[in-house]
Image (cartoon, rainbow, N blue to C red; front, side, top):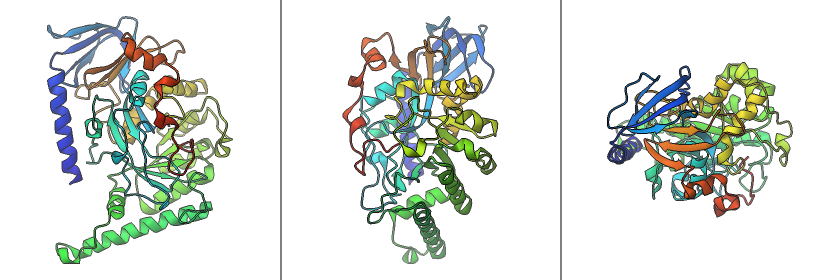
Length: 435
């Protein structure tokens, strides 16, 4: 049913896009970073019907009816993929339980939030919107595109495994409350996680034993249904973790139960980089340019990302917005470059690596023929402090233009670009425990 739901959604999105962008658009004259290939000086990018139809050098033939955008002296690159965001006021589990695999952010995110306009101003085109980390498992995330829409279905993007999101888990101090139903120690956190996975395995055994006999099927359990998607590899676990000991616990759980895993934040990842690499687990990191305020992150080091990459770990960079403003994700990657990460790896961390962590790399994350026409135009080098996002395009539709005064307000404005949910208390009463 979930897969059919996804196909129906995709068909609706495709129909809308095809109707909206029949005239080809050609961006020419700029430096094109395809991400998966070599950079193309004085390149040409042609998009039509929501897809990339051509990408090449100056000799690339441009359709006679194409709308031309002169990008001379500018940079064209794929739209940015943010693997960890809290825009739209997402809510997941509540104080009734520490483990909430049945809670869906899908049912809580406001698709018309002005926060998404702020994301567009930062060049973000694909987001993984997640509930907070005040629970061991706070619920199901959603993967969205920055399309224009009034319902969350207008924004949803379904991956090639037939689901529209992952599963958010967390360990360390955030879910460690010690109140009824919640753990008070790290050991209890892991024990409760293991117990949930074991219950899911038993639930699957009952289904398999029942076979085609519906009378023997176990009673429907929304928690267990979601957990089976995790165990079957359809729904990726996005795991909030900071300290080295907590990172190793995540790896231990993954090894025992075989679920697909992306580590998030990974503040002390550099301390256990070899272990992460050996487990072949990707990391979505955050770079805080003003560290402080969280004891778990006291050993934060800007060289974390570069160290992980050198050990062979796939690395993406995320905002955790509102922890890092969505307008400044490119700057976060630049901070990794300053501390040793190559420019090429930093560009991948903003695009294709994040797409892979969401199972969306066949559609987004690089400028290749056949992929979604998600791209941004920058005023100059991506990692220059002087560079601005000039335009953001999603599936061939221009969604942000710095020359438009209404859009510019979200690129340059102060607190007025934030919506109330950015400052609202989350499920456990804390204002800032997402990070």
